[in-house]
Length: 266
Ligand SMILES: [Zn+2]
Image 1 (tube, rainbow, N blue to C red):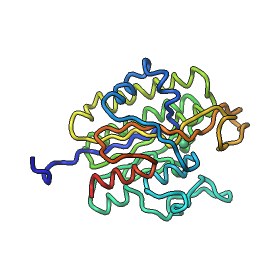
Image 2: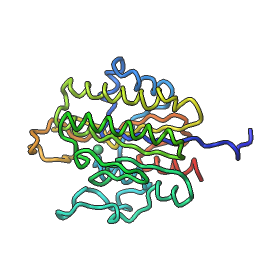
Image 3: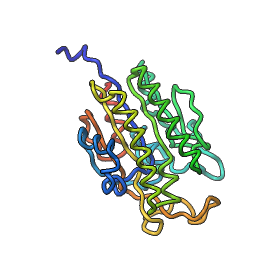
Image 4: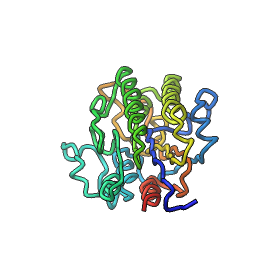
């Protein structure tokens, strides 16, 4: 086969904010699509060396930079919401686009509301969905939009679900959390398996920005224990979730997602 003429396929990064092996592993019998992904791909627990703060980790994942370099830690600084323009980095979608690649990014929560590139998408609940209706809506709309984007066979699609982070903050330790992983599992089935996405030479990374644990066990507290939506039961843990399919680059930290995509195209 002529390697030069071989089409790269689509590189899909599916971000699931706060997805954690400590919920997935004990429930694999109920999570058949996660189970299938584990069987066809390579899975590992990513141990973050940086603080498990969503804004900072997502920013590093798609810029390839550490916090010291991108300097973006929180959504709000001195009472002002940080905007994309305030962060002085090039993201992987900027670079691919400059090089003439077809790239879409959807609902990436390194800022609020989450950021999209090359896609018209209105984040649900300003990117902080807080009730069942909004969680359902996010799950549905991110899935549908991602399916639409994949059908166009672009070079790369990056899509992120934020709902599990919100659900786990308020319901950690309850069966309710597993119910939402099941709903997520069904959507992954629709998106990855029902579409035949993995049948060709496409590439996939499913990743979280951090894991989760009981509120008191967390090394860092990302939110006050008492919020206007209620008392928090869980908080971020430094063990994140990762499954890759057809990705050669060894991912050891969130920043490696940037390099895995870059290496595929350049
Ligand atoms: Zn997060």
